[in-house]
Length: 453
Image 1 (tube, rainbow, N blue to C red):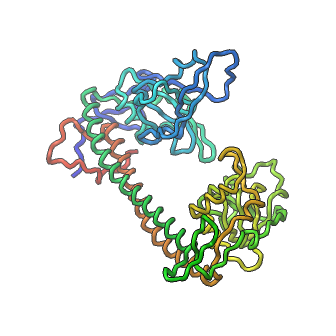
Image 2: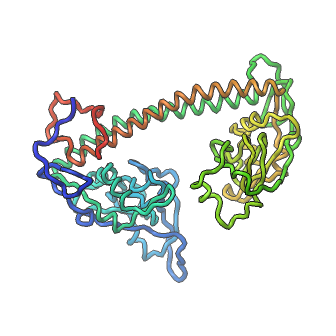
Image 3: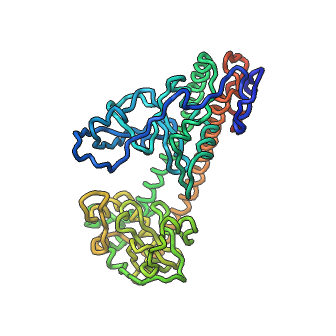
């Protein structure tokens, strides 16, 4: 059974918002709250007495919650602290970033004090409405539509000014109804988020199992009864006795062949390795500037292993599937003869190998670490005969495909639940359902709700 609607509606006066309950009002955000902009990094504090304070960044302000595990600090003039200081009840909103980050936020609870916010995070401080109601409205589909329609947009990025945020139409029911709606949504959203969390835990467990299965297969093989030997390499431990323990420099050589305009620039991602297709126009705009000299790009052929010196230990490497060229930031390792490059890539993606690459990298901090060829070539791996490597690779490909199906189904379920949550919130805060006196006979299921335009 669908949820009950109000008896009477009126035109909201906002074309894309439509009708709202007749006794509700519609106002602009600037009349019920003020928007506090944040501090910009890099200001010259010379001549000022300064203080070091925690501050929130876009990464801390998630959709419906705050991630406070990694809080940065910033030095500002002491006189500026009152200007940027957060107060409990502030509704935090992201000024921009990726499309999905625009306008997302949560209510600040004052758990860190003093605490300020960067200029890419707005602090909306209500004075004519509750923080909880304002947070629901700004996170609803209609508010997100408004933010996108008023934002400045470029490739996959958007930002909105505080002036436009202040013009957001805010739907206001009487205070008592606001309380009833926020209470109802708190309960129902909690149920939906619990279901989402279950699916997220399933995905995490499957990814952990996938990683463990791969790590075992590429370092111990598929035969649990195979005789073992000690590799004499700490991170490898024991390996099948018929496998060869070799330095990477004995199976690869570094090559530095220059590319040309006839070759496609291949995409290399941390998670997916090297793509078998060239960058599209949008990616080229971001990764290849007009001033780049294409002759500095490096030619690669199928079977090459390429890695980014600064991101190798973070997964910035992969096996080349088709010919092309890659950025000058990459080292190109070409097989010496017939080498199971894809198998070696799997080995290098295991947690122990990642730490080994990190150990061989040189630099003062993680941000500056570089894995040079002279260090990379000394990393030791264990390799099975080629036919066994191919069999292991095929088995793992099959396992990954099955796990990917389950993960995909879980991700679909999460998207469906998120859509239902959005639909429920949007319907409630725009008055499309009447929550004043819900009848016990009426279902509060969100199954029949569709996203509100």
